[in-house]
Length: 354
Image (cartoon, rainbow, N blue to C red; front, side, top):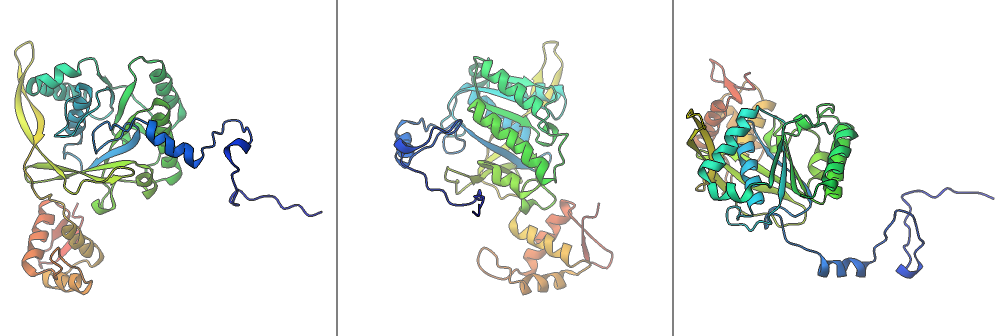
């Protein structure tokens, strides 16, 4: 008698609930069970419309745009329960792994909150927990340890933050798909077993339009992506991915404000806080990046040659018109200012001058 081994991908018909076998470690859910779950579940967000109570996300930006200031400000809003720039917040404990930068830098950021936003600082006391010890997501040891500690902790986490992803996975190769799949699998374990939102800080790759550094499978693993882009006045924050929440049509705008701090010994130094700012165009724009990609693909071209190539590629502006020479000149100047391109004595452009 021929025996054909079933394939794991074969369709399997699931019997009714009362006929299901008692399979160890399996919890089969019927459609009615799932629909009734929506009537019972607590659907309050951690930050209304931005972050669910459970999930995995990252804040992604170029270096020195303001990721750490942004996430510390968000952490204090969650810990205090005060609205986050017009959005309702569910108060809870925040555990922040400050893995990048020195202790002094974190202390100055905390003191800046205490000085400029004392009400928020006072309401958050006892709910902000900062750790500077190494944390390695490239193996199971630290993941197991944090889950065990959080389950035993009476102050259950609402959010766990890793600043930054690269510092939290030093044993993993960032561009290796299998290594990073394992890292994100561990992050998901923390989300599921600690019943909280896990947020990591990450950097853009060389091509900003391609998103955070590393493989596309990382982006696919996220529930929420918040992208920070530099503006003339500070930076913008846009939720560029939401798995189950609607994305916001417009970004939030922030400006950095320098304030004077003073320690108990009377020594004065400066700190930075962020405040909501006015709408301002991000310096990084799709058109600007399009010009950069053309320069990368067609090296050593003059502006009129670049313009011809761009419009032969049927690039359209927001007004559905071809790019003109003044617009190209503006984008070239911005790319030169950001040191993403260089110009030769002949007036031709080339990528990556450094």
